[in-house]
Length: 192
Image 1 (tube, rainbow, N blue to C red):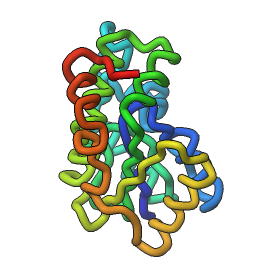
Image 2 (cartoon, rainbow, N blue to C red):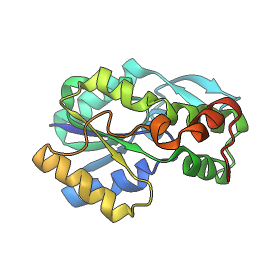
Image 3 (cartoon, helix red, strand yellow):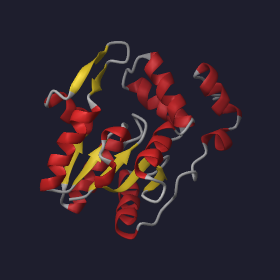
């Protein structure tokens, strides 16, 4: 059974959206981090980032077993932990880095983790990893900035059904934010 990958930098809204997409499609929802932790598919814990380190090969084996039984929406920012051959469509959610910074700070992420994730969003890290893992033809991106969950879910469902949507490269934070992007990359601050 095919998997639908919903990825993006932590804080862009993956979980809320992926759960709703799975519900609308009538298929299983899988939060990869929760799966890895609950089934012991981790190799350690990064205390500085307050995050488990997943065992990517063990996770891939588990997802292959799951996909042999049913289709699922997989929610993660680690594309390389998802078996490429099983992914029908990969959708990477994007969010204005200034908004992302606010969300992560509201979640009490450590400052280093906030900065790392804001930089990753500006530099397209999750998108690049998804394209390298799943190929440009199966990968789409959606800018979620200012959109409701319902709007984003509808865009994903359209991508899943029609294979049409924004292709990689349609979101360019460096171009859109100009000097603010460079300030965020350098000091983690943008102009008010």
